[in-house]
Length: 251
Length: 244
Image (tube, rainbow over all chains, first blue to last red; front, side, top):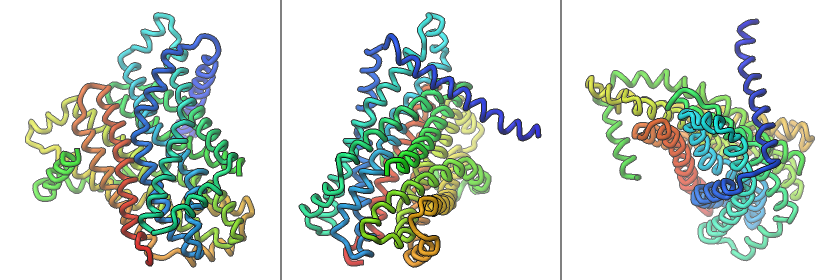
């Protein structure tokens, strides 16, 4: 019995602590906002994440076409590979990958930054000066992520499709215009709206988790690294769980 | 950058000759790594299997090829998503924790202390960790694929997309042993990439607590980028031929 309590109670402690964190973060959205911080964070998220988002999604686009070609060949429908790319990239992979990469690059960076501030007692210093750390540190980051997430996802989408076009035309000798018409036939405005909603939801739910991991770092240099680790793992699990739920609702 | 990492690895491989007494450490490190990574890998792949199954179900309804759902979901998960997602999570969980561990040792000057007592940290710390990643990655990939299929099968049953018999029949029709070996080879290479980059960034961490966080961040970002780029080339090697 006591062993079970020892395993379960830290879990409930974390869940409760995280809920309080969410409540404080979102209640800091009302009232005064540090817009300068928001702009700074938006620039940081965008500039840090864009290079890796573009390069990684380009390779994923190439890869989807190679796999999709082989799979569609089983059905005897090689020309439909454009449809496969549109479905796989637009509906699932571009939002997940963009969110995961923004989480890994900017999110992890912010977790380790907040962790360092906690270790060096800068967050306590803010509280002493009666600056609400949720209002000054967390809320701008979350707002910036909610604003930038969908934009980065759109960039990821286009880089995915452009790279897929290259693979289809130059690696498999498919007809380029036929490929593109297949792609655009299967991207509807509703799909794009769903993508934007998805990536906004990822940012709104998972970015506070990432900040939470950094905000409560403890234990010196090792603790900052552990906070970074927790941030990315919890963020990834959160993204995929929300994705499964949203996919089930949307389609 | 590439040259430095290669040099780092080549120096570490000298441990096969000069540091043989530390190679046995690979076993506990591997078990530790699998234990750390297994829950995130399972959770994420299950969720992804559910999403893939729902999406693929809506696509195959267009072809009225619902009975192929099991087979094609299986191909997608075993060939592509299982290995890649497992690798991303191994680098998120295992890569960062290795970078953190070695980075903290570097910051606290424990690595210098090892050198001082004439123990080569490359042999004692780095090589067993790289080997642990190489061994653990295919095992985790196998677990990931099975959980992905469980999620896919569960979603197909709950949403009533296809009958259970048709699902498993098409799965066993499409899957070949080749797909399993392809995933194993892929994740072995991914594990190697993650292990080398994780230890490299941890080993050369500088700048206090902030530096440890930065090296963990660098390790995960660089290894995800490297893994996904390597993935394209391995896939092309296996499936890229037009007429194959």
